[in-house]
Image (cartoon, rainbow, N blue to C red; front, side, top):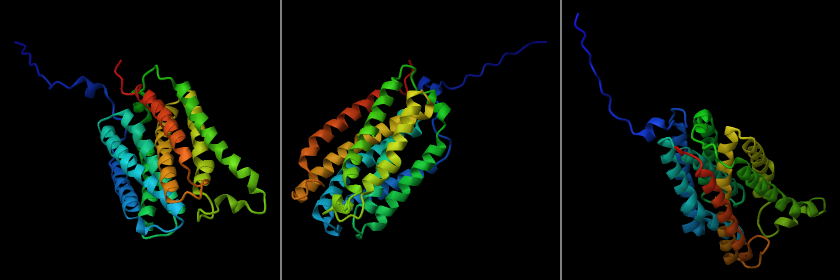
Amino acid sequence: MRHIEIQVEFPAVPREHATRPLVLAPTRWPYVLSGCLAVAAAVSAGFSLWAPSVLTGPEVTQGNLRGTALVVLALGVPALLVAMAASSRGSARGLVVWLGAIAYLLYQGVLFCFGTPMNNLFLAYVAMLGLGLWSLLVLLRAVEVHRFTARVHGRMPTQQLAAVTALFAVLNGLAWLVRILPVVFTPHPGSLLEGSGMLTSPVWVQDLAFWVPAALVAAWWFWNHRPWGVLLGGGLLTFYAVECLSIASDQWFGAQADTSQPDLASTALVGPFLALGAALGAAVVWHLRHLDRAD
């Protein structure tokens, strides 16, 4: 009996695509919700920045809001969209930045809703906050953490980066406690917010109740080389880097709007926060350099 050999040639697959696992489960909801978040954030920040007549409240807090809106438009929303596109191609770097961008926009959504007196943009602010929260939850639910781990280089300096994350979180918490503790047990604890138009500080509330503890947990996992620690630690470093630049901007805009409220806005803080943002940005780059590497 004659044997006939049949050879079938399959199209060549680029090595990068053959070896790069997807880092998200096959679902479109993270992309849908984050795309809607980008629109809500752009609308909220765009009108806050370019139509200041819709804003209400003290001039200094209006300036703070406009400074934040500038960074949301110039950095937060573009980073979100670029990171989503990169993640759709299987990039672990894109996923880290995506998480950080959502965290930043969610953080600002809280401030827009609770640190800004009621105005015509209220529903846009609420949409930004709600979409930020659900985008974060759905994205985390879709992460294939074992596939993300496959994209982490073995020489990533996890403990050094974890230490940076923990140090910033501790300093962040201490910065607020140093201001709060001396007056919180006095007859007039609200004196800390005089001139701001706020009944309480949404910055202090969310930092002390959620972001600082979350960063410390992520840093602990990061230090112990746990996959979720690597992912969340990188996302939080990204968030903190952008937030420092945002603070520098809101301080400058707030001080320009009203120079009589140095406790709420001061140009003296612009330089230090720009430097801190640059330092944290360098840590983010250090982290990302150890992802998606083939060697």
